[in-house]
Image (cartoon, rainbow, N blue to C red):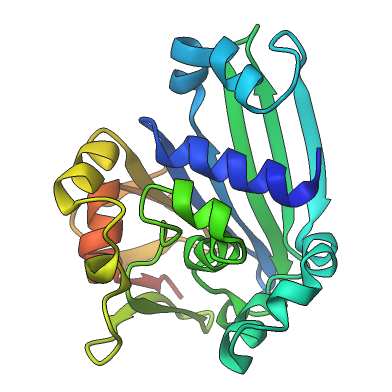
Length: 253
């Protein structure tokens, strides 16, 4: 199966069912680390695994365990990408070292997808779901079948991370001047979008090398050693209120 087809179909499955998205960040003493977004849509496989296998053109009993980099995907879609704006091409270029690992099994009722990368500085990180939404727009056929007409993951904001050793921040700034593409899209109504994501969750799980002194979000749960925090949101907040995810973490000296 082609890389683009696998990614598009995997992401579409995640969009059409109750799914848990977990944003993991592991930060080392020197500021380097690992970033990943893990998507678990196994509930859909439990309900309709056989039909999914047929739609993908594969034997429903055959499991998929695939790993590839976005660099391969960018090369495969280079002609389509060349037609995008210079700004969008630049954004896609930033994720060429991201790795995509997908596991699907109708027998085990399993659908797991992880998009991950190592980073030298937290400032390098960006909103990977918004970047994935850009890939959905590369082909009209994909955009036509996606829940938001190809804009899944686009919450009309700019996400930034910082880590100084004393403080960590996650800041999502909503672009008031940017046209709301979701509002223009007629392929799915707002009510339908809410229905699709009503039972999905987005979890922040951040792991630090130092003990946490305080966190701006009062709902944050701490690990026993106070080096890890976990915060859970409805996925609808990610789409409609991304600034609710803004976070500031201060560390003990």
